[in-house]
Image 1 (cartoon, rainbow, N blue to C red):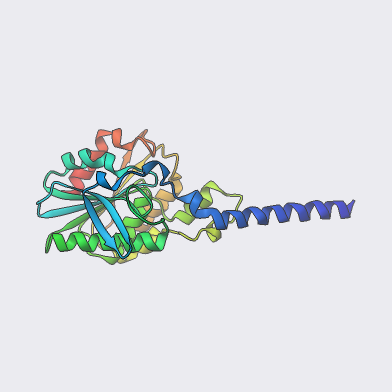
Image 2: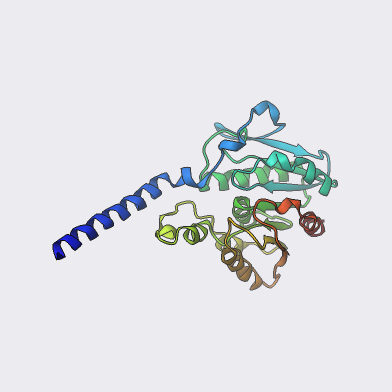
Length: 259
């Protein structure tokens, strides 16, 4: 009997370790969702060259002095925000570029590359707007990218939409039966990355967010509240992760904060 139980336990342990191993090696396929965002390069009008990789996207309201960069969410077609952002911020030139592997951009996504790309985007935009403020909006996955940029570059104002504390902690909340926080390689640790940023921050959260657990957003907010500058928080009651742009309060909050 004991031998049978030991054998069952051994099989279960082996199965569990196999699942952990599979998750570790396949995690980027499970983490990033570029498939529904792909389009032809002829549909874009702005590029940032990264060696043998070209990032492609759009520039709106060209010729304005001040600039705004939008880092979108995972699986988000950022081009769908073009008209909205152009209307919300008529006095800013707006830049939306797809992550590598998304939209019409070359390459494959992973954290280190996305962070380096984001810095290159900021630097190119800053060169095109010398001595002018550059604001940044990051949504969902883009909040992690934007937080990294803010910790490394002089971001004038930073808006984080449906953000998380870190992607590893968020994954752990979804897969509590796995040691996910130790398995995840692309961690997007926004709490740590924002320690080097001292400018104004706005957090826009959806009270019915079904992708980013409320506790993960709350931990990020709590860490920011300890800053001398604090953090502005706007809660959209009833909004979920996907329909937040349908709420008029969303655009109003961003416009008031950025401008």
